[in-house]
Image (tube, rainbow, N blue to C red; front, side):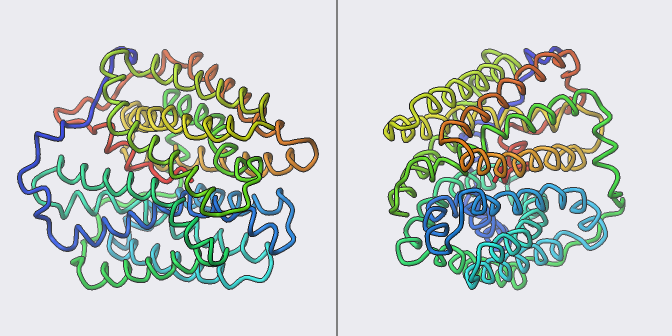
Length: 420
């Protein structure tokens, strides 16, 4: 099947409405935890300048909060399948939530930027364990079939991404420590809910090896998509991590509203716009178009970096392109190779999160050495090279998994969510 015409789209919202809200309490417990987990993607954005100011840290030092978090999340993706296949979903979820509670609270109690960077690494480990397991748990426990489970998880994803920056901004007005302590409290509630409301889950019959995700990257199609995502994340995390410094907005709540707009555009585009564009134009053409438009936004922001309204509008509009791209690309990851989808997801997430970790570090260093335009220029260059990788390897992007009931775009994004 040609990759340009492949389209696995989310079920229409009218197809599975009976019983959508009539779910076991265990499903709601995991969904609530998922919302809080996804809030962490943009939670620290509004408080980055405040952290730097309070602790006397440079931009480069502060952005190591992203580097440690994303780097450990990426590396941990190699372990999540190994762990969950030996201890079961419930224990894996509990371990992930417990780690987030502990390390988020420690980050809020920190007295130096180095301590926060270290504790964010532990937070990343917990987030990887939770995100990698949550969707499968909801699918297994939800009533009304796969469609309802996907819709519920998709709703948690969108709500978390959109509200994270806003909550971070509101709590950040009190103190930069507020978002960290707030996350710890919410995750503690989620942990309690999982312990008491989620039934014990059996250990899977087949065990995953740590080397399986790395071996999966031998497939040219999966390697092409992962390589593209590695480079594309130079743009994604430059926008997410460096823009708060370039905007020079001291108020956390004002920064929160900027990234709230970004999150709303990303969530709506991923759910409502991506499937329609994919059906009409095909997978590779839409991804190529989104990468081109995103690179253009970054170039404009680099050129007009001193014009703050341009940065605000550019950041919010970029959410549309990022939402469409994330949904379609992560679906492609699930379908393009013959390996198990969980293994493909782990391989892809490992590569792309490492790219994000490097990008955040590079943006901070460039912003210190040169001026604010340079991180955006690097991000644009990364996206353009990623586009070249995609187009050069498009002949390998042939769908392998062609099930009677294939994964939808929403499900695919949910499996590999947590781009921050």
